[in-house]
Length: 194
Image (cartoon, rainbow, N blue to C red; front, side, top):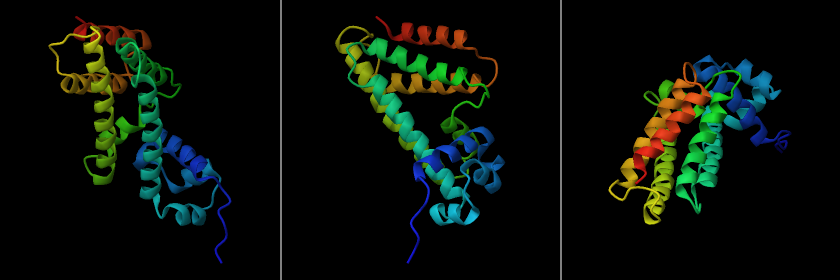
């Protein structure tokens, strides 16, 4: 009879996610995961099979949290303009406020792994598609109530805003400050206002 797990899977995912986020996939060793989770090698392999499976589970956990964050900000707001501003600003503020400038786990994984790891690419593609739909829906609502220009295409505009956000988050690892990012957010919104 197998012994029941003596640890919380979600807690292990959060701790592993933090290590992968700080060190990257290639820079993370099993010893790093063992130290962060306080688990032995056998327990990790029994729960996740290998480092790659643990990474995918950690990335999925991160993306679920990111989707909840996106949905909270973008879905069903009375003012889509304020919702998009709040979403962009909150996202950038969280990244700019990091002591260790590690950016975003999704973007880091996109740059480091997606071109050589189909599973990572698919997870990120699915997340971005869901985000595009949420953002396009908010833009369309904004058009309906006169907050945004009616000559823009919501889906294409959502893709542009996401591309700008990815670029800004990448730059926060270096030269982009919180104040600079807020100015850019305001300019993004000015581009789609009537």
